[in-house]
Length: 303
Image 1 (cartoon, rainbow, N blue to C red):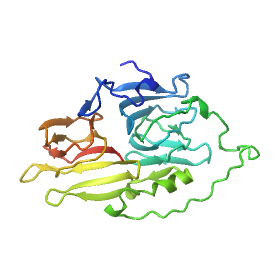
Image 2 (spheres, rainbow, N blue to C red):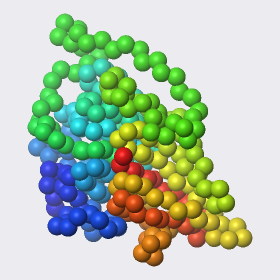
Image 3 (cartoon, rainbow, N blue to C red):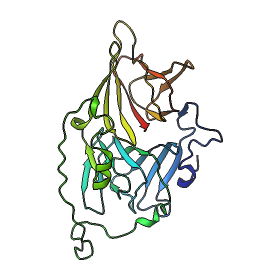
Image 4 (cartoon, rainbow, N blue to C red):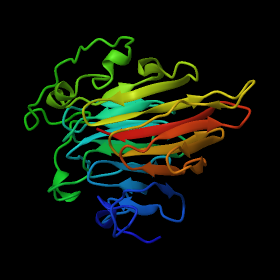
C-alpha cells in the first residue's frame, strides 16, 4: 500500500464511516510511511496500524547504524514498547540519552523533542502508541531543526541545564492505575523521558476465578499501554473474564496463540504475530488460549 504520512494521521484504516466496529489490521490494511519523507539518509520505516482523533498505534524500524532526523514531537504523550533490538533514545533539549532493550518501554511526555538511534548490529523495531493526537498544528516535521545538546555542545548558545529528576520508583498496586509510572501533569512539566524496565512495570491480577496477568508500562490520564499474559490450559480452556474499555483500544499479537472473543457479537479473532485488532469503545471481549504455551498480547487504550 502506497501512502503518505499526513494522509493516514488521524484516519487509518481509511474509512468513510465512523470506526464503530472492530477492524483487524494485517498486511492488507497497514499504512506504510517514512519519517521524515523528504530525506531518506536519516529516516525510519513505519507501519501504521490505527490512527484516530484519540489514539495512534504504529511500529517503527531503524536499521543498524541508522537514526531519524530532525527530532520529533507530538501534542500527546508517546510510549514505545521495544519489539526487537536495542533503541537509543535522545532528548536534544536536555542531552539525556537512554538505551531501551527488547520488552522494555519508554514514555515521552507531550511536546518533548526526541530522536531515536540504532547503535547495535540488528534491526530495531518499536511499537509506538500516541494519545490523544499524533499531530496538531506543528509544521510536521520540519520545524524542529535546531541546536542539539550533544558532546562538546556550545554552552554559550544552549544555556538550559537539566536538574536531576529524583522520583523514586516503587512497586505499586491497582491504586496507581492512571498515574503510572508518574502522574501525567508532573511528567509533562518536567519533559523528562521515562524508562520503564521490566522491574518497573505495574503488575496487576485481572480476574478472580479465571486470573490472567497484566503488566502496565504506562497508565496515565492519556493512555494505557501494557501486556496481557494468558497461561496455557489445564483441565479447562484458559481464558480471561470479560474485559471492557470505555475508550478506543488496540490489541497487538506477540507470543503464542491468543484468541479474542467478542461476547456481544460472538465474533472470534485470532491475533497473529505483529498483527492487531482495533476495538471501538465499550467492546466486551475475552482472551482465550487454546495453545500449549503462554499467550501474550500488547494492549493500548485511549483515556
